[in-house]
Image (cartoon, rainbow, N blue to C red):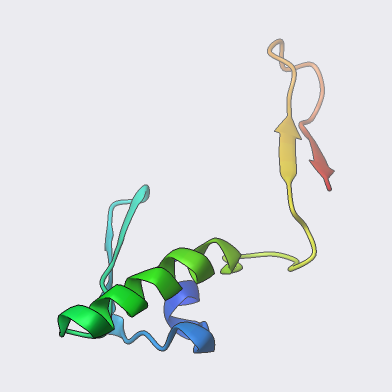
Length: 80
């Protein structure tokens, strides 16, 4: 997942700026070290990270996997 963040050209991040801690946690560090540059980098990251496409189709905004508890049928995927 962190490779998708690094490969997004607009973010201009390198491998040292993104760390993953298990499957659920990703740490993203701003590329600028000075206070003023760091502030603008954090603003840009906050704005751009929700738009990073991890896997799949860019036009999909939501996907839901539905399965019955009794296991009688296969799970269905609803994509919006």
